[in-house]
Length: 504
Ligand SMILES: Nc1ncnc2c1ncn2[C@@H]1O[C@H](COP(=O)(O)OP(=O)(O)O)[C@@H](O)[C@H]1O
Ligand SMILES: [Mg+2]
Image 1 (tube, helix red, strand yellow):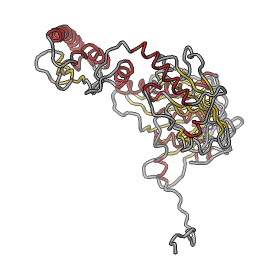
Image 2 (cartoon, helix red, strand yellow; image 1 turned 45 degrees about the vertical axis):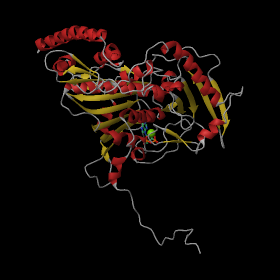
Image 3 (spheres, protein in one colour; image 1 turned 135 degrees about the vertical axis):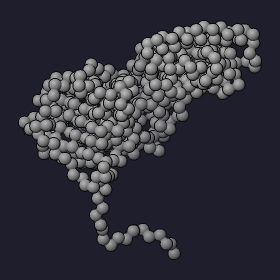
Image 4 (cartoon, protein in one colour; image 1 turned 30 degrees about the vertical axis):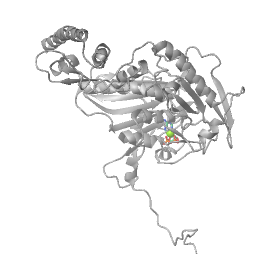
């Protein structure tokens, strides 16, 4: 007789609400750009046409962040629902919201204090604040006085004043460096803003290009006031100059409940346009681009249709997932990834264009076009050793994209103590160009060093010296070349050091 019991018996139940500290673990897959994109989703759902993201700096440190919009605001009766984790509302068909989580998960992933201040038409301003951390024992949310909410809403924001809108404010942002060093903070801010502009420009490119919404970023210095406002420009991953003839084509297939359309594009060749050079390297820019309600959720990857392949780097497929494709595709709560279910690759293999083109025909065409254009571009170029330690990842990626590589140990460019004042030491056994530590500080000019510092100098050295590592021995000509570089580059390094030390 089988021991299996179909039903698990129960006798009564106990109420087990989540521990309030669970709030802290929300949104762990977020980065600052994906978290802010989720707040922008909320602004767009609220009908905002203008959204400002503002970093707040006090002396050397970043202390907070604002997201300000001119949307319809939040009514006093609904603000508690808005602050509640997992409270879903009735969503309209075009809405980007979905889980009733975004605001809280995005905020707590980055900050320990979330304040929401809002005014809806015909209502007074309202405000709420959540604090996480510090061993919270209840789900009590703080009520912010209406006059403070009104003051925050009515600050002279550099977007047109509006009678309704929402201000989301983060304090105690964990991802901000607390170094007390102005230079490091400025560097962090400029890197963060450019990453943010890239991410938002890509994810919202359709809405930005249609003028549905304008996004701005600025930095306010608490003592000196706001800085220059910069506008987020759309980055359309399909905006190539001349389509290869016969492309793009749309392949469609029917799944259980809906039609799935794959808009299959082929870039005419590699390009230095920002629309082509998206973050993440040539192989991750290829593949599927999933859009939901005009917002890009996921950029690149083949989801089981094909493995990433250098030869497919011109292939990008736009897929709109507005219909009911439950089971086929799944969106994570951070809305930063769409994952394909087990049936996806099989469904896609059945898709066809009106002329019978299949996904395989498309992939072959993309590979053919890549081979043709790439032969023209790089076939004449001589192979190099792969870029190794000390070389900035962006430089390494470009070298790998542009030049054929030997399947061999990489070439490193690193610092060490070298007696005397020679700038270089060429070490063929470890395949390393050593740089004399004594010049490092001067060449950095006061910036912070790191393994991958000075990308420009190292890129030049890579191009200049790579060939002397090839071949089984160092010939007289190579030796003479190294002597020549040593003389000239050491003179240059000494001049840098002299100027640097004179300045101090
Ligand atoms: N900027 C905003 N303007 C107006 N309402 C907002 C804004 N941000 C959030 N809300 C309200 O808060 C609710 C909860 O937001 P969120 O946690 O992101 O979940 P979701 O967007 O999935 O509903 C939203 O449904 C909306 O009603
Ligand atoms: Mg949301």
